[in-house]
Length: 152
Image (cartoon, rainbow, N blue to C red; front, side, top):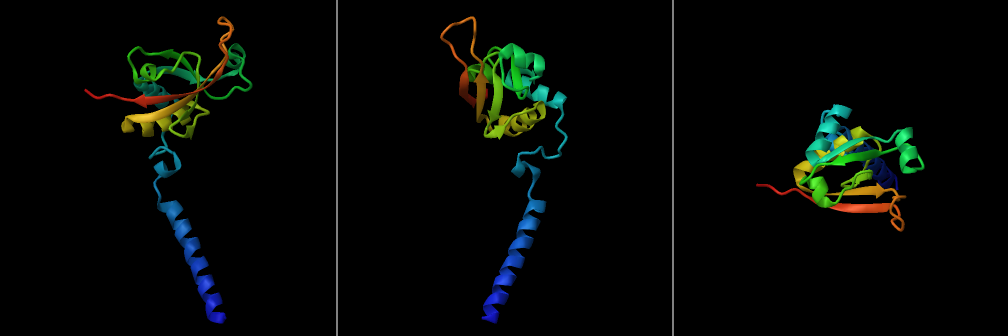
């Protein structure tokens, strides 16, 4: 019985240290973070433009204009013609909610997600499109866009 208890203690101790070392050794990319942690709003805007969108964070003014429940997320101001964003169906006034399963609440979130996703050339984007008061019958909703970046 004492041997069994010592064995359990050993495996618990070993498991704890492996878990702790694993968290320390794993690269930041494993946790959805930038490799060097230096993502800035400016770098995020550059990556967004590379994808084909001009974006900004949702502030209180945009929240009111779009009728959103909270001032959170990233809004699309413009979509560049012929870009991967346009080809995937992303629309102006859409709120980017997710890029390849990474939740987007800030420009830095978007930058980190695009930094990881753009090189894969195949990823998904989830966006919320508010209801359009000028076009009756068109309500807002969550849309999923499949992005495929073609190479020459």
